[in-house]
Image (tube, rainbow, N blue to C red; front, side, top):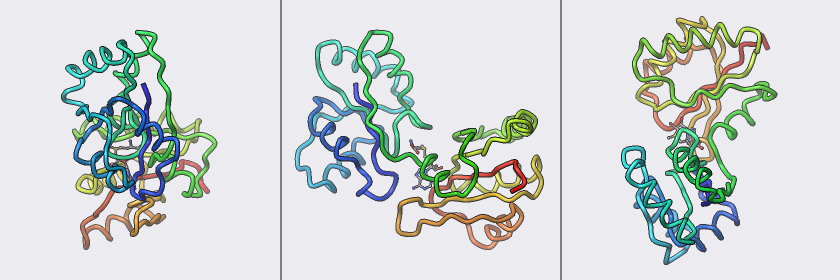
Length: 227
Ligand code: SAM
């Protein structure tokens, strides 16, 4: 079983090993077969292994099918729509089951928005807390952020959050409520043409996005340290 990272924007970020693996396996389990088909086309690969759709809602049904293929000696690669599968993407349940069945799981490393964002943020990288997507329910989100504020006081780890553009403002408002008007970094559209990484206070971002709706993919980062 191969866990294969794919680009988060710039297609040139695919690794040689990822291409070799995707060409050589018998099956590719992917979140969106259409997107994976497009990735193959962009790599000038005319044919590809059989694609199996694998996403959160069909995981339970797919895992036994994929295990069956692996037990029968087939090689399977897991890819997501972008970045490293299993990181805020489906896959860890499949990996767990493989390990339980003594099936070898090999990670083919490559892009992931969390590492791409922190490495160019200028924020401390020695310790970080990756929260992925925050809970959608406002009450749950605030509760988690309040718990984070207490638990991260001594640890002083850089915090990294994924967010969709339509929920960004709500999350910024909650961060402002819990942490106050701190400096944060927003990494947007990483590796893409309009890539940007901007640091400013939460209120300045809120003013900006009152005028212009946020667009694109975002990573939110901040350090509790007074830098
Ligand atoms: N598995 C992926 C990874 O390894 O980064 C993450 C998938 S998750 C469903 C998608 C989220 O990752 C987006 O909402 C955004 O927060 C972040 N993301 C993905 N690509 C990005 C990019 N090019 N720029 C900024 N954030 C990105």
